[in-house]
Amino acid sequence: MFMVKDEITNIKNLLRVRHMTQAKGLKLVFFLLGLYIFLPFTVTVIGILRSDSIRFYNIADFSLALLFGIGIAYFINMLTYRSTNDKLSVYPQTNSSRFISSLLYNFIGVFALVIFVLGTYLIRYIVILLMTVFMDNVHLALDFDLGLIVLGFFVYVAYCLLIVAAIELVGVILRKWTYYAIVGFTAVLSVMIANFGSVVENMPYALAFLIKEPSLTMFFIKAVGLLIVFIAIAIVINRCTVYYGNQGHSLNKGVVVGCIIVTVAVTAVLPSVLFTRQGVTERTVSTASTAMIHQHTEEFFTEEIHIDISHLPNGSTIDVQVANRGVVAEVVTGATFFSDRPVSISGAESLRNIQGDTLIISYHQAFFQVNGMMLSDFADMQFIAYLDGNTLFVDNIIENVQVVILPIWGIARQFDFFSDRDIFRANMIGFSAGGATTASVLLRVE
Image 1 (cartoon, rainbow, N blue to C red):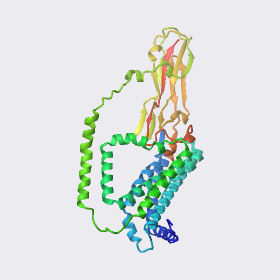
Image 2: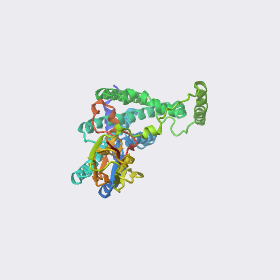
Image 3: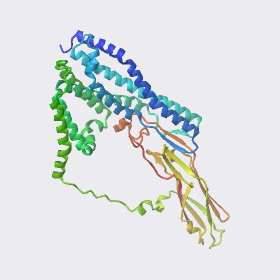
Image 4: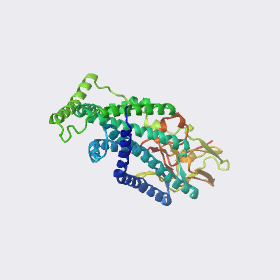
């Protein structure tokens, strides 16, 4: 029998002991994570209450940051596996019960962390939602989607468990074949470092079977299958490992020197060999003329206003007066877009010595965007143009909206099930912003 009743009992007891001895540390982690999330969020809420300009609050997807944090934390935990087990050595245990209890405890910790992420998201969402109810200029940029909340939760859990299981597998390999594994991993990591750009470029293709899988069903089948394989291999290797046989011995100096030699050889010699064989390919970048990029064609102006000027004699001049008011749009702290006027005028020279009966005002509204969220989707923009005597008054009024971008489970954007929904930012990591906070106007007389 692979696992006897006594081992199951040992696993339960070790799980209980691990919880008792590590509960305080886990509570401290949750407390620090809470500060990390809610202190900036408090600043966001205060900013919404005080802001008198257009503002996008581009809140980071904490689930993505935690994904990297889980990888680092459990890698460190893997390195302390033996020291942790030393503290539990007074309790009845076997290789398998000791390892499985550690693995299960880590999996339980993952579920606790993911539930924590979901809970903090819901709290922040409810706070902002209440502000949208009592403040007309506050808007949530992303829709609340129950399907994303539930299914995204399990997708995220699947990725986290795979990361933990992969780290545990690396751990048992290191503990089983310590010296050989260190040399092997050193060589692999050295190759990756030496070819970092290529690794970053090709990694998505290597993992495409999972991270590019568009079907939710197939993703879960692959993830569960891969998880079972990782766990099974790790348990088998761990079961055949003899611990404490050479405990207390430091790493052989020859192994350390060998790792250094391998690292130097791979990072210094191998790249030069590869570059010599492959040569350097010259890359040609085609750029468009700056003038062509910024030139406004007639197709750019989507709206028109016609004003009858038949009462003005030919040869008259129409003066243009633009509202003297600045427009400020803030993306994040330190990234502010400012226009000293709400309207940008082109073609004003056509109003000198007019020859025609109709003044045509073609305009394009402000199209400022942050992470794919268009300002026009939230702000009540009102373009104003009227003629008073020989003076044309032009203005563009934009509400000082407060747009909150609060994402979650951004890693789930790969699935067709969530396509065509306003639930993800345009960029999974970081932010993009651009456009114009002013209305562009083209004047002509016919």
